[in-house]
Image 1 (cartoon, rainbow, N blue to C red):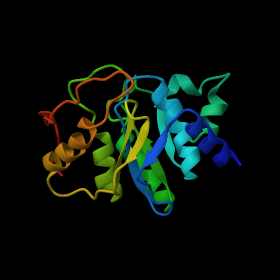
Image 2 (image 1 turned 90 degrees about the vertical axis):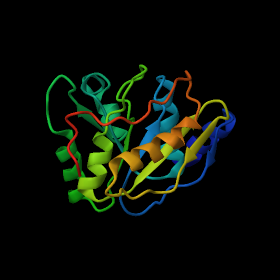
Image 3 (image 1 turned 45 degrees about the vertical axis):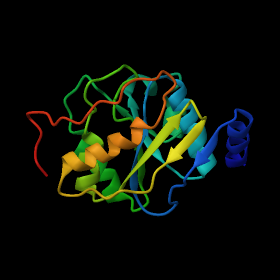
Image 4 (image 1 turned 60 degrees about the vertical axis):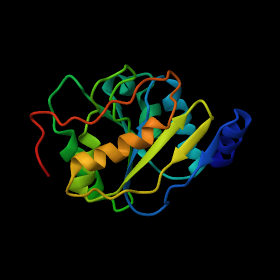
Length: 190
């Protein structure tokens, strides 16, 4: 029933899907560009409309009372960005524990404009051996664009450029430039 309500909400608001996502198996959804709080709302409604149990990571402040239970119910797990903890390994453990685990992440890690995307999602995909699905929330067309699953290769730079190319065709709620991929000096090779 919640799926039908979500589909109706999207339709009433003029949103549509372009593409689809697999219901079975594991994957990481990279959702962007993340430019407003509306991204989360549209994303949660879209997830429900797809009828797929997809988890997400959110800043720890979302998970404190009185609303913490609600975000956990939606499939969220808290991340304390003030601490230096290994989120890649923690996420990989979820994939190892559940052969149907699916995770959605915003690569920017913030709604603000950034010059370099965080690459944790890529490292999670490599370590967990799961494909990446790029998902664009295109506010100019009111479309949720789901790309085909992409397996990572031995060339992170080429993979990241392919991912960024997808998002260059997507207009966020507050349009911004998608950065070019430039590996950090501390980046570990695969």
